[in-house]
Length: 465
Image (cartoon, rainbow, N blue to C red; front, side, top):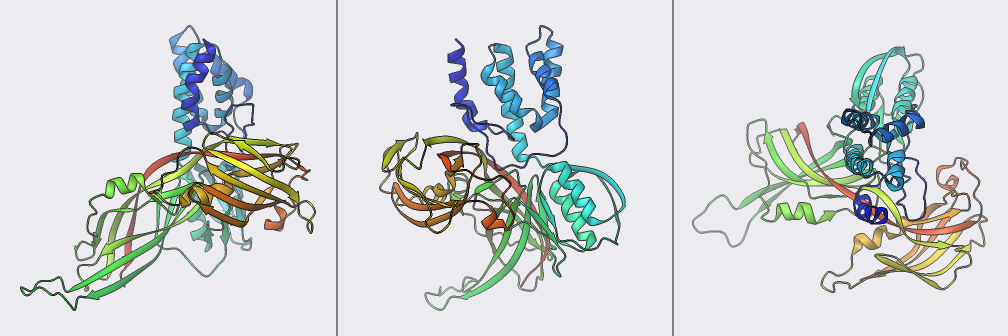
């Protein structure tokens, strides 16, 4: 009976599992290691265990209270709740945990972390250190300005707004596009005046350009206004909080676009827009916390000088977690061997230490899609381009090597051949690695679990070219 219940839960967990600081255990889904754990002290393990136990209390009021209390603890309680979900024999506890874990997992992804602080006459560096402590996000402050003091009162202010408020007040600029989980705040002679916030996302307008087209042939004899057209394009960046690696986004949909004269800049409506937004994703293939996007506008009045209001909608695909699909033990010995997973199989040619760099290893493998490949679809660039990011190499203590990316990569429909290079992270960061790595003892090809979230954002008072 318990085996049946656990099997029924597996399908639910595969779309909702994500934990902070969890560990791999047999076939249990492991959490992504891409999220920084908050440094602020959380509830005690005993307190969480008591709440979980109370979910099965004979008193319905105690059950309801335990559920509310666990939900209030947020991500601090999720690892223990997942372990209990797998281990419990109590059907009532199991039922309530399924609902809570699913709800809390989704909320953790789509709700921003909040900052609450009251500081008076403190340097910017100390204020950013406090934001780091509360959120667990690494903020690299450029330094300087120790003699200038600032005062702030924040109560449940979303992370990005708190960071921008402090940086703008102190005359610093926020950079979130270095391809890692760090937020950098530097004293640069630049600024980002057009920024929009939506949950855990920050939208930064980059540039707007215009092009005019005059039709010279096949002109209607009856005349009309179709001879001249002007097209506009607005490019912007999407920054996610470090807890939220992004896998891609849909084509942005313009909901409203008005100039200061009241004219509309809405582009022509695409008949398949809704299907396009939900089914086809642009710029996929690389997980990260920064994406580049753009949208089209249709200018109606050249005398207008300002895009007064622009409201858009976009679907963002988030990495909700990972689970091992193929695991290879003792990869240094596994030469010319094949391994099958649920959606992908790999042929491992070899894992070898680089002849010129001690402690650096090359992984030579070919990955193939399991099942029939649609010949009409052609190359699946999304699958092929992000496959290398799903490969992990670790030592016997579980310390992971950093992947420097493909040295070579070749793909055709349904297969990818690549040579990857792994080594300590200090080669990339210039800082000593936190753990000394031993020889690799495990190679894992992960499967990514994703969640798609629809976001509305707005820019105001953007100058028109």
